[in-house]
Length: 235
Ligand code: 9D3
Image 1 (cartoon, rainbow, N blue to C red):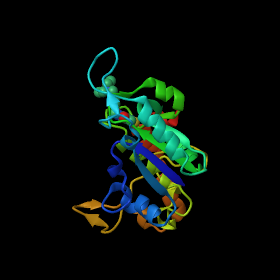
Image 2 (cartoon, rainbow, N blue to C red):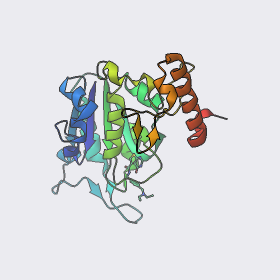
Image 3 (cartoon, rainbow, N blue to C red):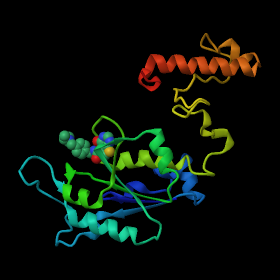
Image 4 (cartoon, protein in one colour):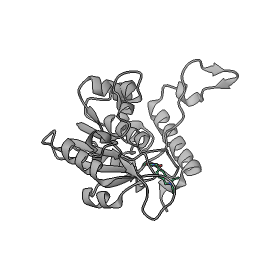
């Protein structure tokens, strides 16, 4: 998969350690060539004397608004760098919430083009013209779309074929599906020692009965989901 990131902070998207996308699973995926992440500075596509990407909002008010021209030209130029069609995605608080089903769909595509704003907003006319899919990562306020884009990249890349080893298989994650398609929170996990500061590991995990262990884990997942995230279980 090729991922293009359009941003005024391209240096945030390094795939070399110790950058966030340069270590752990995304770092390994990049090193193995399973994903190519290209960060493009929107500022490189400015045509004005001061290389400005933003301007004051019509109608007044605080903050600055990203201008149409640099972003439009950057998108068209970056798309022309590779023949594979892009899914255009704008990271914005107004977007559709990112969920595991959306992540799974994005992981099947050959090429993503992610756009992050680091301003109060982006001129609505260039959003209309680009018609990107608008995505949010949740109901809290970030300083810009870059960290949201990194969250999306991390979630997608770990699903690409060949990225996860058997040891890290995603089949049993939080938000992955049970055999019946339900998405549940994960069960508790334990490792050695058997007793730590007076706390014991649940006896059943020591029994060697794999059927009983699987049943206990499912019960734990259900109980936790009901207690912490009843919204996941539906009406
Ligand atoms: C305080 C400014 N807000 C006024 C109502 C608007 C606003 C503009 C830009 C709030 C945040 C941002 C920057 N955030 C993102 O670009 C962003 C984001 C987020 O803040 N939360 C969750 N997902 C995302 S995706 C992009």
